[in-house]
Length: 186
Image (cartoon, rainbow, N blue to C red; front, side):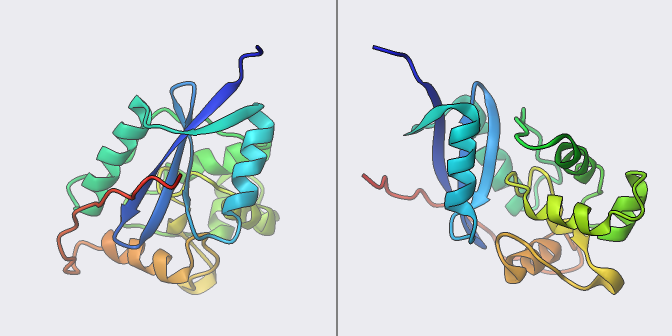
């Protein structure tokens, strides 16, 4: 019998929506909003790219990601850092890596991000790469906004983007968060 690669996954209930965490060979390869419009196509693309099957099972990196997410949502930590597997084009990877340099509680425009990457005329391409980020929160594309601070595009929806930006605004009161386990869906 042929051995298959396995992408492990587990659900995480955040205060602003359900996330699905995927890991492959000890690295987090997806943290995406379960009800996002591209969730199923993103997971299928990941499966095809990694030539892997899915198995609902926690791994060390998923458990660590869950722990860090809980600390983040409780405002006990401003960083989310686990080993990541970026699956995309070289340009997408450049954009995604640059997202980690945006400080907690700060925002940047798509145009500014394009300029920082040395491609000032590629604002639309940068925005598209941000929209294709499947490692939400770990690659904080919610911190990228349109001209004049307008909220634009986010896989979890604009309400979630606003929630995350408000969460990172330490001047606002946020209620205590306790994550809940989602029942296995068999």
